Length: 346
Image (cartoon, rainbow, N blue to C red; front, top):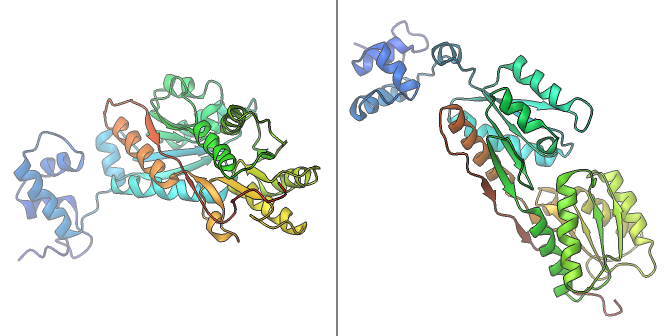
């Protein structure tokens, strides 16, 4: 009698075992595994039930030979923020694994230092079926065009529309930064400063533009600006510069949570109470926002959901889908304990 829990040889079940259990040919099983439409619903269901009962896992090599794919997708980035990268990678893996794909992560330089060439070399060397390109790499001039010319399906994450990518997941960071400015203004603040990210990067430029425009709508100019590099040390140096101003700002927007954490440390070193004497808002909604004391008010990007959306779209494109419409992420301001009303003397 055939034991559905094991293969005929008592080892790992094979495609032959699935075919025998479902009473179909190996070719029909292969068609189901490769999502071919040439199988009726009743047979497809029977085969899937046999696969589940047997615990059969198709060989990636065999699938690749049958379809001409590697069943690998690439994630390309140049982000030193481990909290952001970890969340995005987990989202990609969750969706990719469910669809039978594996993830290959590739950090790359940006700017005029060979980023496009490096990415193309990675694609050809790894034989990935497609790539998810994260900012700031997605904003490198010519990146989308190069991938399109190489016929590599590519989904970009970006704060602005970019030409040539197969599909784009947009996050309106300009509007979200404007919401931060309005949050400060609604709490009575008028001396409002900001710590920018590196302004050569699209996300940092977009966040600054939205923030400054919202201040201008209220008849305000920034009380001070300093530029960081999205890391802790540069954020701390920028915070020291702004906290030394006279008069000191009563509210400061840091363009990511890591720099906001540095700002809180710099304020504590000067015995400046948050939020009683200084309101602080960050950006990203990363795990660190909940770890700080007080908890950080921040613009939360749904990074995990964004990764799932981008991965789903990429695999659809790899498998012949033709929906190339822009995707969108919903960002929201999450209030913690680091922002509040303007000080009485402010």
